[in-house]
Length: 357
Image (cartoon, rainbow, N blue to C red; front, side):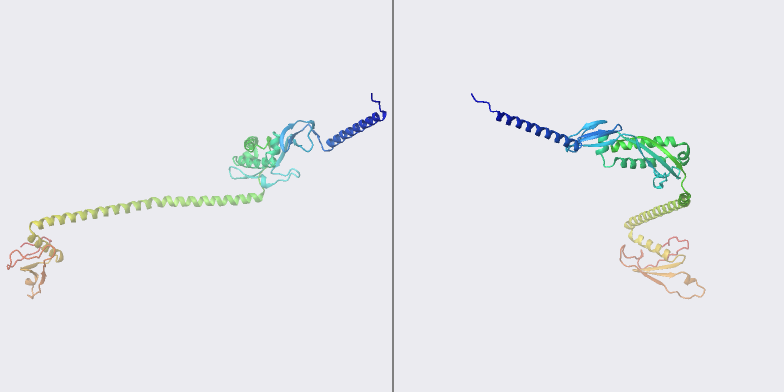
């Protein structure tokens, strides 16, 4: 049986005490570390917090004291109270800002309108992470909607009786447009703070623009009037030219068809009796060349001699030289009288009728 060693027991007790002190010190150090790195956080009554783990949103915490894992979890606090911003004036000094307040109404008048937009956070996670600056997005949407609604009313409604209706329409339009952006904000109320006519300088500039616009409309109306006056006459002239051209076309076509029919008829007669047809053509040609002249035609073989009849009955009894016309065998054949060696006389009347043999 082994004997009990008091020294060994004492050593064991001392080692246990040292280990206990070390553990206590470590726990105390851990608690100090946790407290020093903000592991506990408090959310006020009018706040909410978005808790993220490694950058990913995991929960939204309500007001009260909460714990987070140091170095792993982070907290982003969000104000859930109703907030607001001004459009058209500076909230600090209440001075008008014409860049945002000056607007054009439906009847082309200028007005200065100041708005106050109230909003609150409806979704803390989207308000923090859906966009870089959700309030700026709301401001831009509000400016656009305000101008669109003011532009649909006349100046009297904007300045007097239509304010409540305008406020309601602006609010509904902002809510509709904000839903498309989905930035976690909700519009609570829209108020017209003030509405008044613009300054004298702006009114003078506006009148100058209106005068130029009226001058433009007058010039357009005068041009349209002139066009309406001249257009019917020009159209009538065009119609007359077209009708005349069509009539001339019809006349020439008919004339050409008549010439074709005349030629065909003459050709048929020529085929039946070439010699007589050639003589007839010759006499008709002489009637056209020497209209109203009485002549005696003496034909022998291949030669026709045309003697003016007036030369034989002239008072002075002088001789007139004859005109010899020789027909050669071309085209329709040579021309010669029906009886060779026999003289033929034909008297052409002034009325253009053909001569007789």
